[in-house]
Length: 324
Image (tube, rainbow, N blue to C red; front, side, top):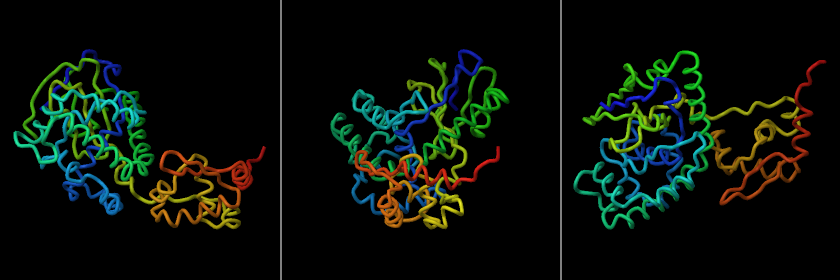
């Protein structure tokens, strides 16, 4: 059991945050044991081609049979708006002694082959592998993942306001409870330590946890990772609600895309949301852009599409008008 003693008994001692790096690293659990993460099988199948270009031996070595991951790869985030680029940059400055300690804590004395060697060299390889994994397998899906995680944070904040801190904490997982001023996290492992929640307790929703978990080391900042709400709906294809008048003019799919693109999105991201292939989406996007209803811009390696001024006018004219 891990125990965090809150230094005050109000919600100011507890904060929520979202970490792209945590999600990236914890998702490797589903690589090692897909059967324990059946809700993510649709996503795993979609990665079949992309995984061929990754440093898979190293990535798989970042978890063990108990599905533990090194603490330095699960840093405490400080905001619901944390960016992966910032987290990877901080990762490059982790003390090599911490890297060695945390890898041994996960694997024991004998490290897997990809993790052997001087710690700075191993860390550089880890960062490169994670960066490529993010680009090929996570970046197209992250807006959808982030929306679910941010929705969970909003729900938990409302719980605190309506029912209090203790009720919110017990709702995170059956293994979490508040006793007096101590937050107890019952773990499946033999991990056992207590510490004051100096600097506050950070609660981090994740898509890749079956129960609540904490850092392995008591030296790490107080943090609880817990299963986010709504994971069962994460990979379900989304519908495209469309006004009949617009569907009659453009066709249901193109009209739905035009409605959807009030904010920029890539063809890959749209394909994931709708449960179709990027090729199918690209055909419709090109037709809408050729008709002047969409504009596109390159952002890094992705092309983002959004409605043009003409597209905005067409959508606005198709929406039902309310009576004065």
